Length: 348
Ligand code: MRU
Image (cartoon, rainbow, N blue to C red; front, top):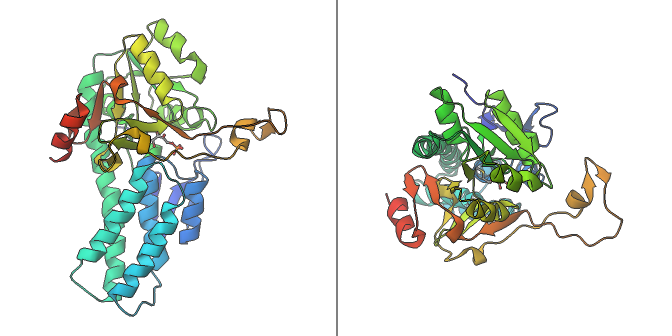
């Protein structure tokens, strides 16, 4: 059976990641030795995808404090909190990042020891537990989502919500991998996902590696693919889901959701519980990262726009909950009304 690579592992006291900026041309593993290197890898999308950046940040927290000379627990926690603020500043939208940092800090707070070297071990084990937990959550998302897709011929996905975006198995791609392991090969249409081409570079690559039939399209071709009846559902990941089900995901997701509604197709969001932010009522409160203008004005390193033109480059958009057919989580499938049903499943 195909076993996907893990894009992020803890090896020899370092964080080892697949450098996602170099795919699909080369598969390069790099080692991150300091918290600054982890911050930079997250910022520049060497490691990316909501769950993966949470795991990287948690391990980065350990790199930040492993040589701490703090005299006591209080001093240690102050250093930890400073490092967490720094790591959280790398990317604002995916809540998994802050969630992971909070989980590690909470584990230290609850630890029944004041000994600083034991507390360092608590940080490392909490980070490794998050990594293992993500693997399990994604596997379970696969089980929960598979029945929704098993009778379909093809689906459309956007960006990369696969293995590369998580510890392993992915979120939106998890049900597809789950079905493939049981002999059902679903066809997958993949949006290239401008401006940074996560669909073309990453999703098309990892599905091809897994032997899943994949067809790459540009973002502007999604409507045609739907109109021709070539896909029977859309499935995407998420970076943050508000209490009413509004979902932030890669820029372009909102448009796809509207297209799916117009064509009478179900629009599924797949996400682990670490992606839910029940502290915010609606998607309006989700901070949307804006990235460098050059990501839009250049293609493959070459300028493709007149110098000095105004550029708008939001990395994410928010899909209003009314367009979402169901949210697939590791605990179950949540259907509207999300405001009422989300706390029930999340509370499990
Ligand atoms: O900017 P990116 O590549 O980190 O954006 C990633 C996405 O939007 C994914 O769809 C999302 O993080 C879900 S990952 C399981």
